[in-house]
Image (cartoon, rainbow, N blue to C red):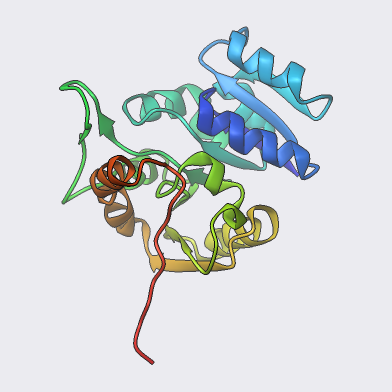
Amino acid sequence: MKIGILGTGMVGNTIGGKLVALGHDVTMGARAATNEKAAAFAQSHGPRARAGSFADAAAFGEIVFVCTAGAGTLEALHAAGAANLAGKVVIDVTNPLDFSKGFPPRLSICNDDSLGEQIQRAFPSARVVKSLNTVTCSVMVDAARLPGEHVMFVAGNDAAAKAEVTALLRDGFGWRTVIDLGDIGQARGTEMYLPLWVRLYGALGTAEFNLAIVRAG
């Protein structure tokens, strides 16, 4: 499968590298087609990996992962181009973290809206699915790094898109338990988990942890 990655940071590199290892063709996009981090990704991952602009990656991908910093996400998607995203599954891995007042970060969007919803409103023809934003990137692509049954979430308006993402999470990244939270409005819950995630990170001394859901019966 052809996959576009928007973003050159740790998340984009980790997801992109895993997808190449699984046999997919991946184009990593950045603001400029000559971006050094994207070029380094392409060089280090062999002939299945390419570098380009946001628009190049979005046009290339049958599926597009959004791995940008939250503050720059909508700008990056506008640079990618609505026409290049139309009809495609767009997996939103972002969180609206605001570091302007230092650490721990605040949420720039919460309660009555989410970054996932803003993406869907801005690009109504894209099939946006919020997922993977509740764990660190090493766990995103390798659920078996953590023992036991722990969970990943999906949220989005398009049932077929969520099913496609769930299959990729299961077959590619090893997620045995994927919970469909409902429409894209449910991205509010997963994004608002991040302040707790940050504090758990500090308390546990590691980013490699996740939630397990336990219920009666």
